[in-house]
Image (cartoon, rainbow, N blue to C red; front, side, top):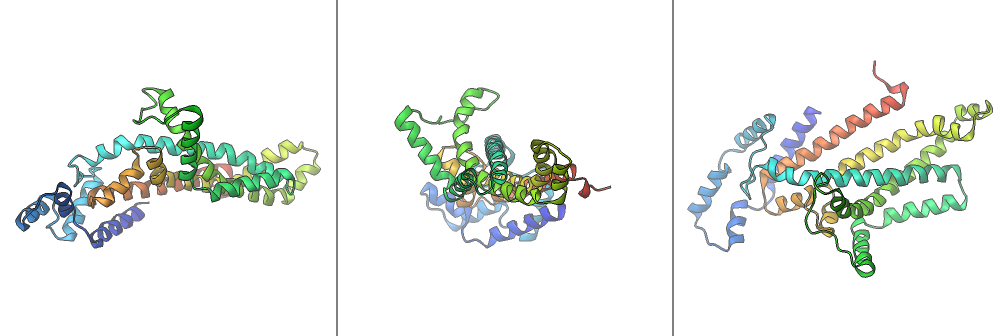
Length: 306
């Protein structure tokens, strides 16, 4: 995990310096103020951009090892503060979308496998293909329009924490979570159907049926437990992606999360913010993969480490 994070940190640091654009020039251009070269050089020196790249990288990595992400070059506020006020929203939305995806995918995928080549199977496959074909942000726009036209409902303009007002929090996040959860349940549904079908053809399933076990016990205790291993991997990766990949959905539902902060930081050439966000997203991916490995080891004794 540590070498991967160091590699990501080095890659994003040096690639950002290759991208054209200068945060100092963008600041003055946004304010509509003409600045002489001396003022630009003084501002770059204040931000530490006049130092050699190796020194900038060493200072940034040194602070990162102390969990000091530095300050935003654009706002001047600590990066931990900028991320902290948005992280709760993104994590909660990702958890809700993942929970909805699990509720949809596992029962439907299993049912489609058990009822293979029946109208139920065809319906589930059409349902999952539609989820793959429909973008989540488009579905979000349709949901908003439907509620505005038929129920005169508008999503709240400001984010309310679950611990402050659960009702207001859920009323704001349930619809984007449903739009995104349906989109990502499609992949898990198809994976569940394929793996359950494969497991149902195994010899030990035939043996369990020959011993006279109930079909429900065969399906839940013997087939589904082994079939869920690749499904858990897919769901884990989708959750990791959702933490920082809901840019358009957050824009549609007016949610100020990590994805929106990502876009703003890149457009403003805020080097320190982009670097911290990329490393944070990479850490989430790596950590979720680690948890998935542990869960797989708990479900399948054959891959447990001694």
